[in-house]
Image (cartoon, rainbow, N blue to C red; front, side, top):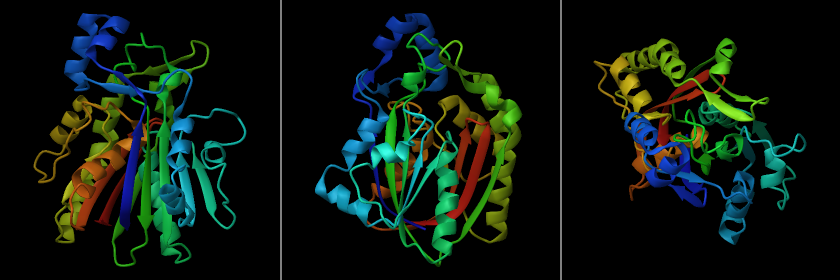
Length: 308
């Protein structure tokens, strides 16, 4: 699979340690930041939302043309402004989408990888050659700024990942959903607040995500192919540390690069790919391991040849 372009947009309000300290207290802000590794977040302004941000992206002629070249669009978002229509209808309302396949996935941090699984199936059918995954989330609309479990962690962002088919690339995936654990990260309608049990999420990574990653790394070794990069969802520095600790002995390591942007949900892996691969001036071919996990609780791990 080839990624031809990734574009990211962030909420327009920057929240650093000072603003967080005013919201939840200086001592809790410092303690949480030291553990999470997150020092800055981006939130959409009160009069806007992530759908507005995504819609504006396509206003330029070049970006609109880029969208029109895609044969399918997958929108990954849990933010539903209206019960009907879905987010894709609001983001893409000014475009003629006749003949294009448009899908909405109401998924969390595993959503980008799950959308890649669907995209690979589309490309394998040989009916599609180009597509785009739009990952858009603004948890800030689901929580107060005094919410200590989530306000210090999450940012609002949208990513546009443009894909092209590549018949020669390898693609392996594994996934799981554990809905009995769903209340560890959920929106409480009575309290009108997003709730997260951070310890339970780390436990989920250790018990379910890491063993599956280890299996895929072992499989790659059996194919006599070293993994070039491990791109893991940027939940927090603590989560990445737990993941690397559980994969001791493996040559590939996950990096935490989101300290200054926060947890951007399903857009975190596109952010990593853009930072590590697309920032290079020359095209490349990499064997990558992607790991998305979170809301659901669910995970999706992918081992693939990734061209840029």
